[in-house]
Each structure stands twice: as structure tokens, then as C-alpha cells.
Length: 126
Image 1 (tube, helix red, strand yellow):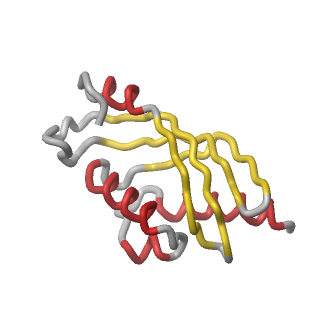
Image 2 (cartoon, rainbow, N blue to C red):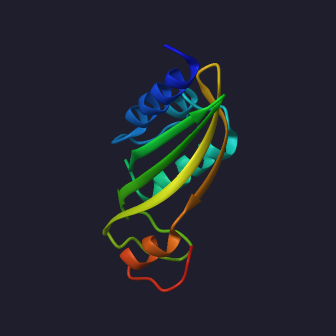
Image 3 (cartoon, one colour):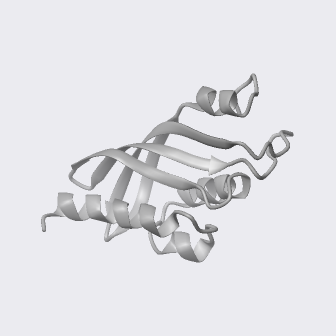
């Protein structure tokens, strides 16, 4: 298998490994070196426990994998003064990972926060 296919397969294993479970540092450490990504995952898992990520499309080049994806979870934790609504949310995002030695070493992400806020019946972005 070439490196591009290996990197895409790694991202699928990563999503499978973190979906439907409470994200712990030990789980994250299996896939991630990027500290900011680990912090984001732990932050969102506190708000949307056991959230799921779905990869809708992937493109790989060199050590980079770009994913058009969806986030799905239930709002069970408070954040920024917003109490839990217990509503299911799903919103799109695009993320670029840099992978070295089967670990995510860097990422860049853009998400549609307006869709999230609308689903929670809130007016302003996070």
C-alpha cells in the first residue's frame, strides 16, 4: 500500500477509534501528537460525550490528508454559559491533518458554527 492510501486508512482507523467512546488522553495518544487537537477533542467530548465523526470525502497528498466531514453528538455538557440542551446536533467541517509515523502531528479545521448554534436554538456563535 502506498503512503497516500496508508494515511487515508489511518484517518479511518482514527475516526473508528474515537467514535462512540469517552475520549481519554490514552485514546487520543494512540493517534495524535498535536496537543491543540487533543485539547479540542477533549473539550468537545465534555460538551458532546461520545461524539462521532464521519468522513464524507478524503484527499491525500504527501503527508497531508484533507477530510470533508461531519460531527454528530448530543449536547449534554454546558459551555460558555450555555446549559445542556440534550439536542442532537450534526454539522459539517473540513479538516487537514499532517501525519508522520502514523500519528497526527498538526491540523487545521474550519467548521460551520452557525449550523451548530441553529440546531441548539441559539443566536450567536460559540
